[in-house]
Length: 158
Image (cartoon, rainbow, N blue to C red; front, side, top):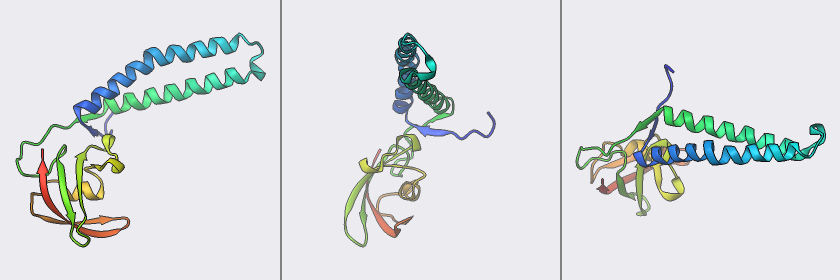
């Protein structure tokens, strides 16, 4: 569709989604169909909670399948940047908070792979967006919901 947003992700994440979709469409769909078949055998569908539950599960499954298909159809596979010394998608960046001296290492990833608790930040996030295309030794100001802070780039691994 025209105007669809692209979802940036690594080839690994793309492959995981394809595998998950295959599992949902083959194994899981058959399991849910079997649940519905079994629930129907219990008789009157108007008062059959097992049937209602199985149909709800089927709806959730189809919704999940549609969501994964959309991600796959609109995937933009990110490749490691060949621009040596600059932060790019896939880089691991060690930074120091200028004010506190705390050091952290962030991995810059696409939005589908972001996990802030694991220090995997999206290139669209406040931290990720200011680090992109920067080099070792540079200082950047992060404008985050919790307030502004300054980071110094200590190292970059591609």
